[in-house]
Amino acid sequence: MHSEAYRLLGTPRFGGILVVSDHASNRVPDDIDLGIDPALLDQHIAVDIGVGAVGALMAQRTGTAAFQANASRLVCDVNREPHVPAVIPIASDGHAIPGNALDHAGHHARLERFHVPYHAALAQQLNSAPPALILSLHSFTPQLASIDEPRPWHVGVLYNHDDRAARIAIPMLEAEGLVVGDQQPYSGQLLNYTMNRHAEADGRPYLGIEVRQDQIGDSKGQLLWSERLARISNAVALQL
View 1: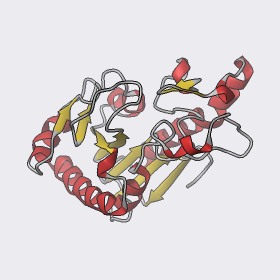
View 2: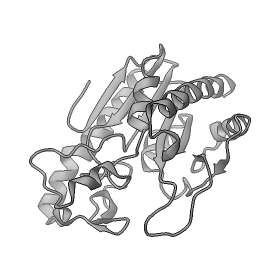
View 3: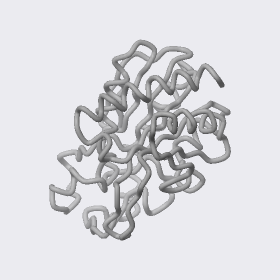
């Protein structure tokens, strides 16, 4: 199941694991001109580096599938409320995005093209094959250009009100020798739109994971983390 707004990898199973990645792609459709240096599309402002590959590796396992955005967050950030400016950003980490200075009609059309079908398809998927656990998978940069402060955590665990899976997963990750951020490098109470809508609103258990990008920036790290997250996700699901 693929569209320009989303892609589904692997075969979802009732009672399995669904890996959801809102920022897995840096793709910009040919008919959209963001007005930026193309080199920026390989940076964190355009894509969560590494998560697409980690999700794809996890989806090769029986009982696990990956639902991923199929367009860059600069085109439309599906992990933002549809009414906020950041859903179609005009700037990101100090870089202007002039092609996103849209009028009302253009803004609405962009949402209808990407945001609406992404969330409709995710809802349909969760209803047709309810997973035992949703793994919300993101990555974060070791340091933002606009904030001169390094981020020491190898991985962060984010949540809003539902911390059931987080409380189980944090000691598991720490047992791997990792520096684990509990609501770091930022709080899931601030940036959690997709999980608020599809998990917390319906009582579905989920685990919000942010991996530091230098951990999954190459194939070796992606394989290591895909195996780690598959193991931990299944262990968490069994304990919920």
